[in-house]
Length: 450
Image (tube, rainbow, N blue to C red; front, top):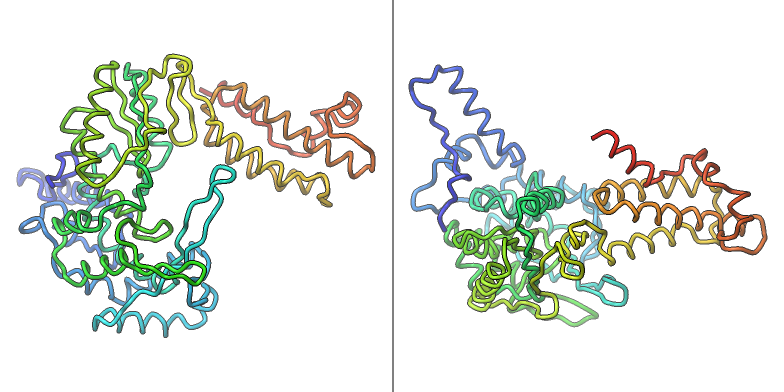
């Protein structure tokens, strides 16, 4: 893998630059890596990252994984993320009570090569109504080791990743990806290849993934740990098995490993000059014409077939997002007819959330319910505020109707908050006085401030 030019760093300014300016330039470049774990990535290592290491491969990394400071930093992150206990039933609270003992035990086992991960507890969480998706819950100990491993490995691969990848990367997120989509659409890239890799996380070939990792990492201890986690036993309803491919969703390392594998697709499309925006396994390629989009889809199909993956024929398509009925969905939005809308699934999920918080049988005061609702509404609006404005009026009305229905129940009278009588008794101003966040008003204020 070649390192893209924009991702390389030069830590040695020309000798004609004054010493203070040199120091300032070096500080600026190190600042690009301010998110790394300082106990692992010293300035010397960051300089090696920028200048390149011999043969392009990193050796002697395992000692940084089991270093006590690394494990303590990893435990701190795992504790802050909370999460459920794994198969050993050791919760975050229980681990904290004996943290020093457990961390010393992990350090010793990792150092002498005796560490073995426990089975992953598999559960199923609801997705899009009746559908579910599997989620793996590693033990707290295994989450700490994976986090320590990620702290060591992530900068090495971050130095390789292209700017077209946004998912599960430091300092990047959905909003950055959506801004890039907007920019390209304004520049005329309106033909979209909306591609979906079928069961991506469950189908990544282990051998090919390990080959890609070995192109940058040559530490046998680290490679052995990664293989242990890839083949980690899965336990579900007292049944156990070892996966032969894929990375378990829910594992700390999975997003990084998934990005390492799809980085090769990014490079391939980059060589063809394609405009791709990828968030983990969700990606779209924007083109100027239908012919260009068809070529891009063919390139993607060839790459996925050659690399042990498969596109979903039901979810992969080409369309001009300026036309009605031919748009694409990406990160919760639908781009169609030259406008942005909230994707129907995202809208349905939000409405279900509102309904669960405004059941007519809820015994709290209306002020308490509004206080409970506001963070949900504000957070949702902050993300979807660029959608078509009619969405917000409609949702504001739904929320007030739900609150009126609660008030009807509390007054022991029939009604679902839709009658003229209900509106007169509890007008919109009634809820505004009690602090209910109104999305349409927030949208208008945001428009005026531009």
